[in-house]
Length: 335
Image (cartoon, rainbow, N blue to C red; front, side, top):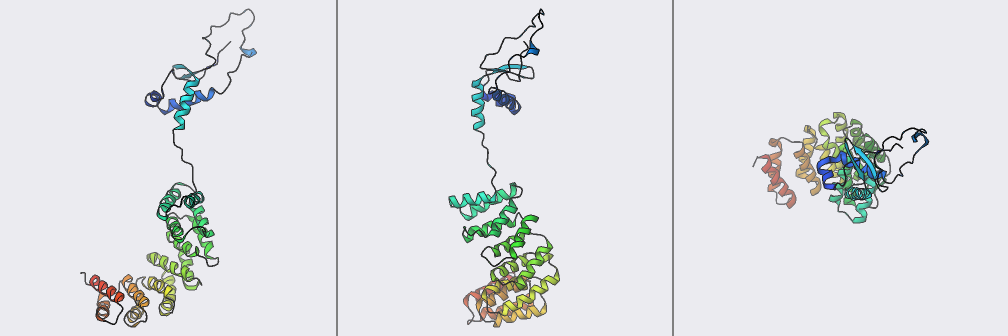
């Protein structure tokens, strides 16, 4: 009877020698041998019996019923159950990290009460390593993430903004067409990571026309970040809305007007508007917005410094605004 042989290594062998001397390839061979222990060795078949009267071929000593013979290259040993158990123990010690998507990560963060910054770091890793994770994160944000607090929701949007792809951007853009919600402005914020001109056009439209002030504020912020690549016609349209916001009565929109009017180059007309608002405008927040727009647009020091000097010397001016004017003076003078 012909005897079936299987690949194996010399036994007994300790796992340290397997790892150090034979390497991972041999370890995998041992694993294969250990798995074969769970398979019953086939018995003789009619084809393997010698013909009547023929001399029986020489045979090797029969292996132990509790072992399997394995051959690796020129080496031959019996893979015993003890060796299989040792392999099982070795493999059990190898850490295997399960793949996590943003949904699972968010559930874990809520269950463990993970801090917002730690959550963002973990989400960054998932978005960096898992294909399609940005789309899943965008869907979460578009759905509202109502079960999480505002700070964690913001960190989610911030992380997503660094890993946007085309599918994720499309999901966020679709959310902008929906009704106002707490998550909608953060969908706008997350789009700061997009380089698509169509996204810029949609954000400019949103800033000019949208009914949700919080979404308009975020759109103005993103437009200012993308200033260098914006179509001048888009910028001019947004500036028209920013002038109205600066003159309006909603303090929430003053920072948005500063972001848009601060996009260079600054026209002479807008420069006069901002200087007039800075010196004689009503309300500290409106005047602060004018000052910030002048600084962002890099207005000429020759024009701005005299206005700042008058403002810094005016004791009737709000103390916070005077302090800002003094700081701006030092910067303009290179002090």
